[in-house]
Length: 115
Length: 112
Image (cartoon, rainbow over all chains, first blue to last red; front, top):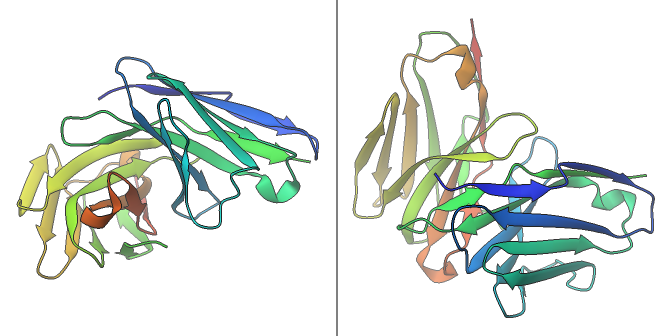
């Protein structure tokens, strides 16, 4: 399957700081990428859909000013958690749509811990 | 909101046994996908089954889809300790574009 990378894999930051997470499709172009968050022992919840060259579409209840998404190229989308607080601590996972049948390929995830 | 519900939530079996987990969903779909997630890791795509398909195999995995009952099952045959993971179904609903909606997942423990 196609390869999607995320960076960093783990980040610890102080409350109030901003954190940027990168998602890259390494061997294919992805016009659409997705950002999810996952709390311990829970399922993935879609946060937003990132479209190359246009504004992201956010799911209900997700603050667009807090979770800034930029999809500057066909292989890179970034999620910036602004003014992070402890309740933002979670596992953030991106995916890229690239399969012939619309399969989504997932990155390895980023563990964010806000102190 | 989550469209899919999975059962059981957790499953513990001995190596060599089969593991079966089920997924139910609510709206019409284009396809249904199964993923595996090892603890603290990303998701690995296992199988995609289209709405006009009823059964699909991949190695030791068998997936069925019953659109009349809006349900799917994943069977892992001859399980191995390395199959220990969480398994999620995800639906690509016709009304939701290309977005996936995940079920709650089944945590599978395969004891050696």
